[in-house]
Image (cartoon, rainbow, N blue to C red; front, side):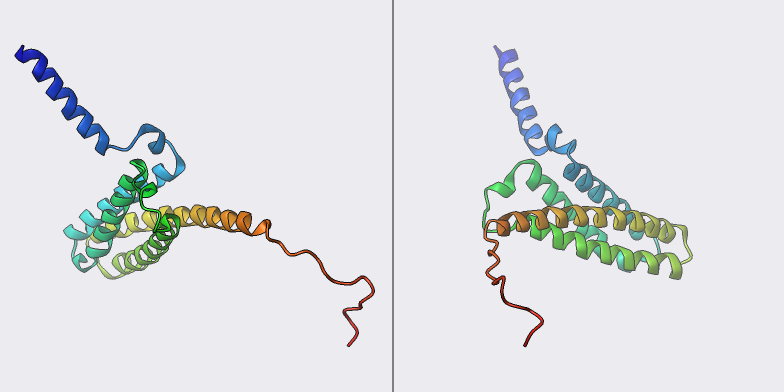
Length: 170
């Protein structure tokens, strides 16, 4: 009797843990892979900055790590579909643009100004993170542009110009 109860409690724990993990279909998508790359690179650069003499830059990778982790959770569990008040792609676009700029700046400073190896490693991982964030905001921008073009194409005004009128004349 106790054996079946233990199996049921193990199944419920596994189901609880699996609900926190991203789904395989999201992980295999382009957005999922970019978000996982952003989270991993932000965490690695956070650890490198924490171990270096450039510890003043530790805040930016940590905030980007937490923001990326939240969006990874939100997109994979479809949490974003419950809150229609936010424009999630625009919020994600702004996060990626600001992160790529910030990572680029702190990477240049950490590579050029600080001599220790951890600062150099943080700068290299920061440059890689800059590329990943830039790719992500490029793809988001293309999706937003296509969405806006698709929404405005049906409301395109017709050409009301007369054939007899001459645009060169005053």
